[in-house]
Amino acid sequence: MKPSLDQFFFGRPIRTTLRPWTAILFASLLLLVLSFIPIKNFNPSLFLFPSYSSSSSSSSPSLEINNKERSKESRIECNIFKGEWVPDPEAPFYTNKTCWTIQEYQNCMKYGRPDTEFYRWRWKPEDCELQRFDPAIFLEMVREKSMAFVGDSLARNHMQSLMCMLSKVAYPKDVSTNSDPNFQHMYYSEYNFTISMLWSPFLIKAQQVDTEGPNGTGLWDLYLDEADDHWLSEIKSYDYVIISGGNWFTRPSKFFVEKKLIGCHYCLLNNVTDLTLRYSHRAAFKTAFSAINSMADFKGKVFLRTVSPTHYENGEWNKGGDCVRRRPYLTSEVKFEWLDEEFYRVQVEEFLKAEMEGKNKGVEFRLMDTTGVMLLRPDGHPSRYGHWKHENVTLHNDCVHWCLPGPIDTWTDFLFHMLS
Ligand SMILES: *[C@@H]1O[C@H](CO)[C@@H](O)[C@H](O)[C@H]1NC(C)=O
Ligand SMILES: *[C@@H]1O[C@H](CO)[C@@H](O)[C@H](O)[C@H]1NC(C)=O
Ligand SMILES: *[C@@H]1O[C@H](CO)[C@@H](O)[C@H](O)[C@H]1NC(C)=O
Ligand SMILES: *[C@@H]1O[C@H](CO)[C@@H](O)[C@H](O)[C@H]1NC(C)=O
Ligand SMILES: *[C@@H]1O[C@H](CO)[C@@H](O)[C@H](O)[C@H]1NC(C)=O
Image (cartoon, rainbow, N blue to C red; front, side, top):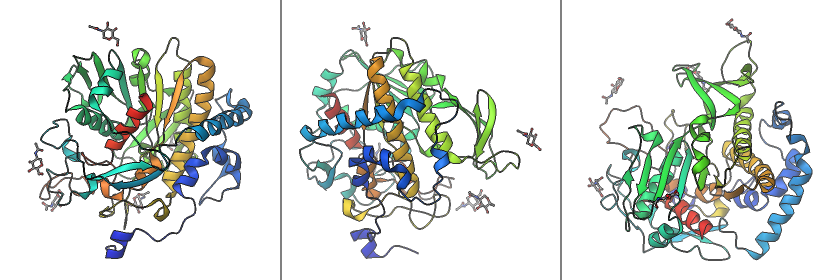
């Protein structure tokens, strides 16, 4: 069942149904032609707005205006998210010796990853150069400011990458109010700059009600119309808020609106309608964005960092799947898998609506469009190098997170570009 050498080095054969750049370039167009794209298991009724949202019925016309504005902008500006990975002899910019914030499971070199190619690539946008991250300039830009990473372990992965990229110039002090790494606050005293992790894998209020659930992965109660107060109550004073999510919506869950059970995702209860994760995922982003737009006196900038794709091959995550490729794909070699495509499209759609609404409210939304970029990096995950080989852990091959150093450092380059 191992992929052949050809597959290792030359990528998957092209069976393109929807190429990433097609999706990225024409994300806005997709909105309009949505109902004509055949997608496996596609059920148009699931894309209807959740019924509790009364304001969304008028959003379609304004979306079109919004898209025109975007395409006008993109004619003069380079789309930094459209390009290819090219070799980078200057990398890496830190190692596990110069950066102490690498989390164990992403410290791939420590756990014996034999190859080093995977951190020797840089992202080259088609029509311009992505300037190299400069920690000194970055720290000047964020002087007196604060940045929150809201989301799951990939938000934390990103935050740790940023701290490593800054480590040449400054180290932060841990000023967390407790020892919970999910709510870590780091402070760069010379710059009066704070970065925080605000753990909220669903973005909405969520509670694990059963650790077993229907399939051993637990069962969650999700309150689709209530943004998670763990981040909502915190972000008011923040200058930059980076929102992300996706993968947790695959977990079995029950859905509540106005505290009433309305359906579920894979709960396997006879009397509860399975609305699937499409319903909860869209509702969560809608609720999160609209909560931000409803906040009084929020003056920060909001970034959506789009879903980070996984790269399991030859099996699912819990069925022996792995990611063993050793080089990036070319854009011509990949296609979106259906779940990544679904997550990505819905997040961009909800982002565009929120961005439009934000314009009226004075909240600036920015799209950190990394999904297609990372889709090209099956070689950047820890795989089995996230822990010792002899350790008997229930960790499977990790094709979700990203090694540090590694391709995720490019998210920090994007951040640098977007703040410049
Ligand atoms: C860093 O990686 C090397 C292998 O390149 C490993 O021997 C060492 O233990 C690691 N150190 C830390 C602090 O993780
Ligand atoms: C640090 O920055 C915050 C704004 O983020 C400001 O309110 C505070 O006064 C600054 N503190 C110092 C010591 O400059
Ligand atoms: C749930 O568990 C059963 C029995 O172990 C298995 O047959 C089924 O495929 C599992 N379903 C999912 C979605 O993992
Ligand atoms: C569904 O059935 C279970 C067990 O039969 C019961 O406890 C629960 O109240 C029912 N839920 C609804 C929404 O009717
Ligand atoms: C790992 O743990 C499982 C369950 O506790 C056990 O069945 C298995 O034999 C262990 N494997 C090793 C290599 O120790």
